[in-house]
Length: 381
Ligand code: UD1
Image (tube, rainbow, N blue to C red; front, side, top):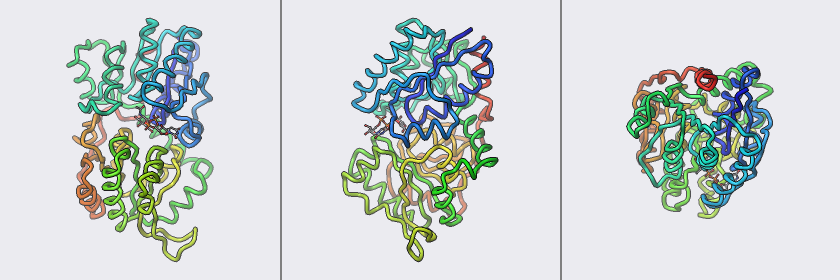
């Protein structure tokens, strides 16, 4: 029996681990999956709601790392994760993505001579001011088996001196999850989707946007955040914008006195009124609740990594408010455009979306819902 410890810590990890764990559990006669939640994200809306809405079972361990400085958070995960590894003595530690929990667990595994697999390896923004870029570079420097989502990821790893036999281009587990959840919503949406979210959608016009924004480079600086919010609010005059607000962003909007930007205009007033324009801020939403909204949006504005890929998979126009992307395929053949943080670019491109003038796009190779099967095939070998 091969024992595999899977590590998830922050919101964007949960949807990547879900399909891999499901696939591993189909081979229970030869593979044993141990699920570790590092507790990097701990708010109900950032963590528990994600686990339940993705249909992930209870984790075997919760390390309760919580927030703190990068050093404190990384160190906390390392200390607690080492205890887990010593107790479980796994054959493989599998980490996903690029968050602090990814590098923390990776370091622990390698120093205990446990094989390390990295899912979503090889992505590079070439912007070393992003904490995620440091996590990607450092994790890949010590990984034994790499799973890549796009050819550029493979090319980056080979260029950094890793050998071909260690790099497996498997497609994207996040897209496995996306297709799986879309099917669940279409079969069982009435039960799965929160009534308040269904109600919100009924109140939106045919053309609306969805927005996510939480990167420190966008939300920790008052000038940048207010510039972006101003441009987004101007876009919101043409079509309403639904904005599930990350705790970091919410805190800074309040701190910088920017909450007046967040009010939607409602026809006739009242809770059931039709929303005609403006920014509709909500608490962070569960995965399926948000998917239920953005899958039918005219476009998505974001600074997230995952949203660039998920919108590409559904060919929904995506405006990425960052200066770089580590996921170039979403721009080269997908529906994504990287616009930087200039408000006028955001406004101009949102206008293009509303005019129906967006570029045509294609879904990247192997983003077909079967990436976790390919990964588990390699793990079995
Ligand atoms: C982390 C990841 C980022 C990912 C994002 C998704 C790193 C370096 N960054 O950023 O790549 O895109 O998650 O959401 O790992 N907070 C809460 N409740 C929570 C979690 C966070 O209130 O459940 C607040 C805390 O004030 C915390 C801040 O948000 O200090 C930042 O959380 P943290 O996990 O450090 O980083 P994120 O910005 O969420």
